[in-house]
Image 1 (cartoon, rainbow over the protein chains, first blue to last red):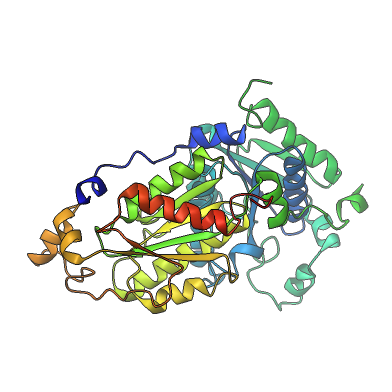
Image 2 (tube, each protein chain N blue to C red):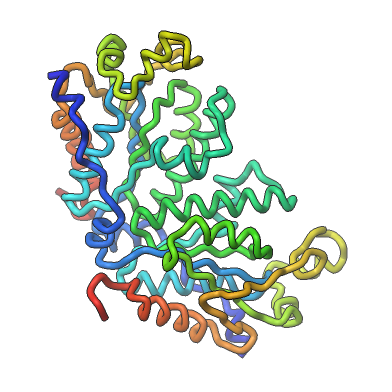
Length: 203
Length: 203
């Protein structure tokens, strides 16, 4: 009896087998941009479009990470980096589990985004820069945060009192002050289609 | 153009919609037990059986968590608790994403496992106690750790120099010193089937 228990297990499933079950691949789509550039809206609309196309997908963002996994962290530069490191590591587990993962974080520093890119294989990390003039972001101000930042109520606010470093070579640039949400979402969807992420069989 | 960008998004997919896409539900199966009680073997064999039944599943264990998400943590009581807290939070995201999640950690303290149980809905957390006499675990000693613990090379080793607190009311008890791996795996599989986790349509 006991002998049977200690034989080596054959159970480990690899990523490719998960892809076969789902009939699509998994990557990490990383949205970066100023507050108000459209990250939440576009990431969730992309999730919805992928879902309608039978793609297993999940959005990691401040809403579900800051209250749980990273609730011990604040907003110092060090804590923000640790927040993004954990998000990167969780995204890695999700991608390994076969989920087309979407991360939606301002992530203003080149070095932090580089750290995450380096966790992944070459084609697995897709950086999407939401390029949007700050005047437009500030006019939208979906959460009233720009106003608070201008009034000094919020310190270290990206774009106002803290820098935003645009990506040098993002896979996709979305000019969200010019495109509609639908156009932005379709651009990312088409990119994933052309990369042959959305099916295991060649399109 | 800009007006169109700021309309509220309808994109959020909930867990039930993910279940519909996968045609099964998602829960967390938490394996606890002494080192050598069979956690790795049984969790990966369960994953394999679920996979063969077209269930989306993923194993969280020391192998994929300690080198990534929790690589900043050591093995003090405090760090071990933080390790398990993060695993619980990640498992919550996985379950929300529709994945039948398996966690495989010695997790020797009742209070730590209670912390994780409380993160989940009532029927979502399934505690599986791998009950195995320590003499059997020590005889197996798959990683040679008991030997090192007895020789004092490893301090604070669960079962030798650190306590293991058995669960008070686990959903499942597997006497892994009496059952074969196949019997153990089937017990958990049958439990999930009866709980109607493995299909959206009643069995």
